[in-house]
Image 1 (cartoon, rainbow, N blue to C red):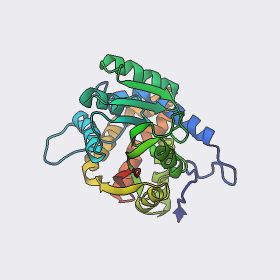
Image 2 (image 1 turned 90 degrees about the vertical axis):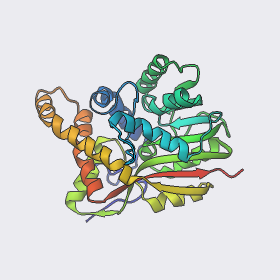
Image 3 (image 1 turned 180 degrees about the horizontal axis):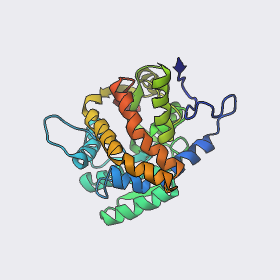
Image 4 (image 1 turned 120 degrees about the vertical axis):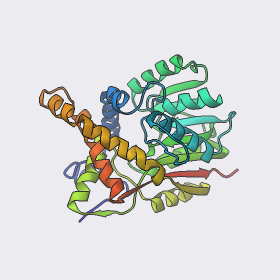
Length: 306
């Protein structure tokens, strides 16, 4: 059996064993992943309108396509966190600006997006100008575990499939608490472990996902609830949207299967980087994680006491 413990790097079974973990190395790996896979995401997953590097939200009551489901995810988080048009939002791990731009465009919020990739920040600025919201948004290169912002700077901290990149999720939540105004809210949406012990076959799927998305580890629902309380947050709520995410899981798997011949030929010709190939393999492995009920997909909301 293989076991995942909190705050360890499991991206490679032999990597960094009995060695000090380097957060700078983790950040460098994540930056490389997103820089090299930018066009892959635009080609195979999102588009220049939604700019979404995350799963979609498929409501059974409405006929969504992939593009609509990706945009709908933003609205679901916006509503769960009770965000108002006048709220100042920090998009912690903003990617190429999808959610930041959406909040400004659809609701008029002032939003600051941060990413550890200078290329992502530059892409996001370009997209913001194209969408006509450059005056409402800012994009900066910063670590969401150690931001340059003053205490009590934001009404909301938003983390959509980004907090998973933190080696210790508590470090992110501690910084979120610091930069939030009294009464401010944090919203975290991500995949979470349903178990900590895995068979060899399951472990290979887990590590493939961690490697492919430059994520050191995943935490469980109970662990996230404990970390929120430990950092001082109150009124924590957990919203299970695994069922509404399943269609995205299946869509990603079908896209990966369809592109398999192209991936094999391109890899054989040396046209795919290591990061791009690892990213492709997640499309297959993530399907196993969800369908064998090794992971669940949750939204957490919590409030900094007034």
